[in-house]
Length: 220
Image (tube, rainbow, N blue to C red; front, side):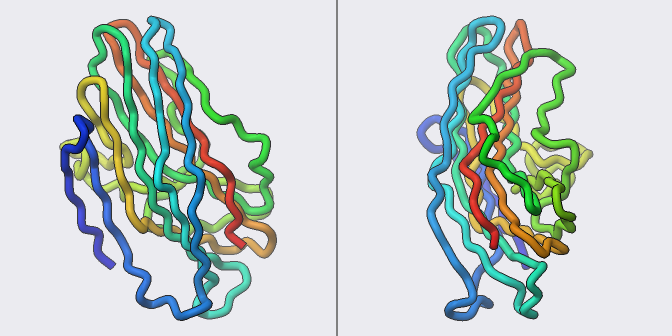
């Protein structure tokens, strides 16, 4: 399974395009696909800069394990994140798209977005992170964050360290991902997930974080 990566510029936005697995191995009736509503939020930072984050064209394909294992689900997700910032002295930002995945966890009370300002603010929506295109072992009552980028060395930011984010310069940027996959193991009960897109925006005055949460969806 090979990921083909490319970058392009569209509508004045820096877009990182991510392609992953094909679904040819899924037989008829073995997968359930559906469009998700995405999300939208606008937050104002301490210096008055406004950050808008939109999740568009969100789509999910769900499938049980090919081995008919009731505790395993396979998921493929697609979407497009667009970030725009208004205000003076905006330097750019970092987009970290991913999904919070839980076993027997009720996500219905989750927020629609939030903004925290401070150089030491943690931008991750959860404390536990797994890599993209990976297998998550989740016990009942546990939720984990999995990024949709595959945390390769310098693939997106030109650095020597692992990254699961995409950086953009100026006031507009984003990322598109297509058929990125993760697998849930060990959950014998209800499993669900929701998008969690964290954006860090830097200006001359502040580093601000805005997190957009999508609508929860059932993994089976």
